[in-house]
Amino acid sequence: MLTFSPTAWAKLLFLRDLGPTEVGGFGITEPDDLLCVRDIVLVEQQCTETFVSFDDLAVAEFFDQQIDAGRHPQQFARVWVHTHPGSSAQPSSVDEETFARVFGPCDWAVMAILARGGETYAQLHWRQGGAVRIPMRVDVRFDVPFVGSDQEAWQAEYDAHVHPHCDYRLSDPRWPQQELDDPFFDRLFEPAL
Ligand SMILES: [Zn+2]
Image (cartoon, rainbow, N blue to C red; front, side):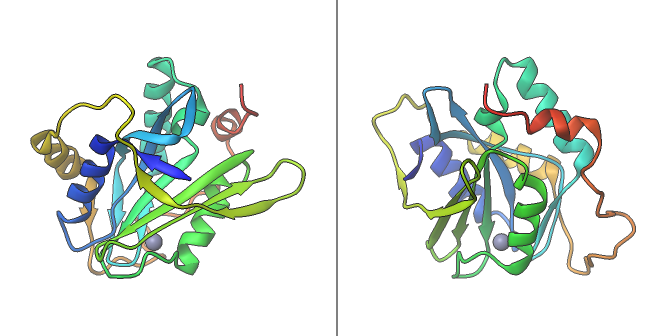
């Protein structure tokens, strides 16, 4: 089961409903429970109603900040959360491609989706001993420490990082689809510490 702290869940609901597009972020977890999301962090992203694309440089910066904060990659680079503005939380083919491209090299990773209609989706991809996909239930946990709501800060984070586009195309040269083959990404996908 993939769980969220009440604060993380409230933030995800708030972000989902701020605009007409998908919104994506990384789930932050504690070392003793890598499947309980305590926070969701947005990075620079281009979004449409059916698509979210993270800026690779911004992702690199996010990873550096998390490492500097003392976290390990399995605490911040394994749970990809995004919202769907419609009623379905089922991943699109683009979602599947993005997940495979970015998180495919990881020993494990989770794709989680929350739709505006309330439907949730989560799947754990596990590579050790042969690739498997495990459907997960999604729930909110109240038995973990959590802080209060901070909609002002969440709004500021959204405004700073989320760039809605109506005419976005995959071939848009402003956002080239980069190959993730530089050494930085090798470092990210080191086996669990
Ligand atoms: Zn999606």
